[in-house]
Amino acid sequence: MRSLATILALGIGLSLSAQPMDSIHVYKRVPPGTYSSAKANALAWQLHQQEATHRTLKGSELEVVREAMAEYRPQRHTYGALPGLSHVAMAFSGGRPIAFGVTDDLGRVINFTARTEYRISTWAEHLAVRALLSQLLVE
Image (cartoon, rainbow, N blue to C red; front, side):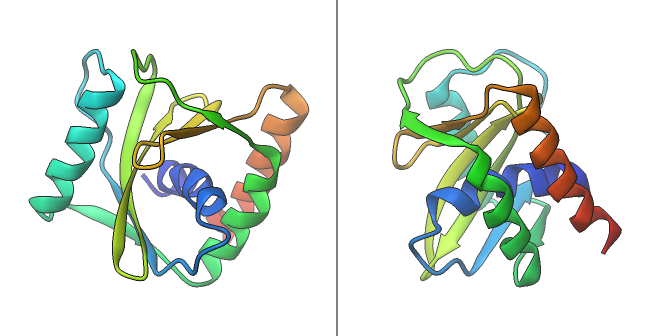
């Protein structure tokens, strides 16, 4: 859970890098099934409203997250099927919640609230992200 929580925090860190981040709540792995963007977004909000079990990331963990997110490239997210969705989360910036999802291969991080997704496409980028994430796992 810790490593996947950190992975999800990566995408959130990039999209909020211009805003002060308070924390990120990463929810347990999503239930098996087929997810669309709308269904994953609804799940994130439902878990937030139910105050479901989550791991909170904040402080120095978010600095490592921001550094790793430099490898991702933003683009417009088109709502549709999300194969490989593994986690959803809520980021908080100034108390404002923002819904996110991440695929299990780390290739896509989706900000449902802003309709933006972040992608990495090369193995070198994947390795750079994993190397930075390993710092969080050791600390």
